Image (cartoon, rainbow, N blue to C red):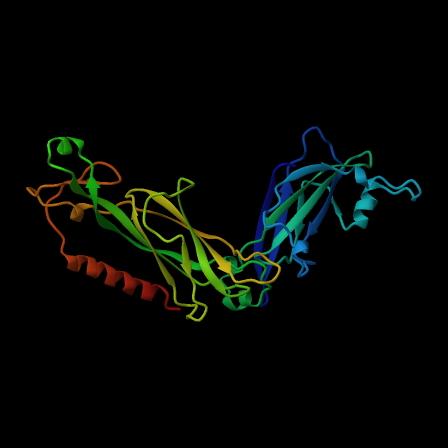
Amino acid sequence: METFDVRSLVQRENENWMLDVTVSWEQPDGVDPEGYMVLLKDPYADVSADPQGMPDDDFIDDWDFDFDMFGPPADAAVTTARQRLEDRGFVFVGTESYSVGDLEFTHDYEIEVVVLNHTDSAGRGAVHRFLTPDCYSRTHDLNFCRQQEVVFASKPANMTFVNASVTCVEVEADHKSDEASGLGKKNKTVAMATAWISWVRPVQQGGDIILYVIRLEHDGKNVQEGVFDTSVDEDPNRNPLVPILYVIDQVRLNKTYTLKVTPYVNKTGDFSPYGMLAQLTFNTNNLSAERCFPAAGVQGSASAVSGAPVSTPGTVSTFCCLFIVLGLLLDLKIAYLF
């Protein structure tokens, strides 16, 4: 049972939303079980204020173990392995699947699965920990989600790619041949991308959000180039419906990026201060780099960072950049009128 699959079903019943989850797994190799004994646990149900009683921040990976401890004491009445597990709250299932309803949104659960053999012995088992879906992302019901119990802050809401444009950046070019001839180094202009992304405060918070932790990735790895903040402060007194506008500057053209945003909550209680991660994938394709390069006949070198150099005549005045910014703000205002 090295692989678990968790699928969720969200459906509305009257004024409430119900969350049902089905967990499935693979039959262990070389085993023909009678069935499985399953126990679903809420790690946070009995957490005390004592930090010693808190679950580990790192989610438990799948692991295997033997259940030799289920053998009955010598002076106890003989019971079956199934009975002993049922006394501990386990339930029997005859297939590699277990369904349970009415779970909490944005909540951490742990499922324990024990193989029950035909010889009435509890063989190998496994534990898998999973997180249920974010309430607002699945229901889009603001009032319902605000009334739900909060274990983790929910995802930043309405994460949206607003716009992207080309930024002209002047860098120092290292021309060794020029230095050797006494001409010194020359500057060159490169075309890079600037992207604007916005989000609004999570619906479920569980405390005041202090900041958002930012991670930008390309092909699953942290982006090293570019100019952007790795965290964004949050003001708990501001209007929660006003979006945060986040700027990613000087990244490469014709690339695909993934922005990951995690809220960090001011919590003094038992639970993790980190909330649910929201992510958005965007690209910097199809952006014209023409305005970054000098007109024909002007000395200097220029290249588009994404690939082959581009040389086109013409210049663009400062007013063009001003109109781009004004247009962006207008689009943002319209997009978030509720």
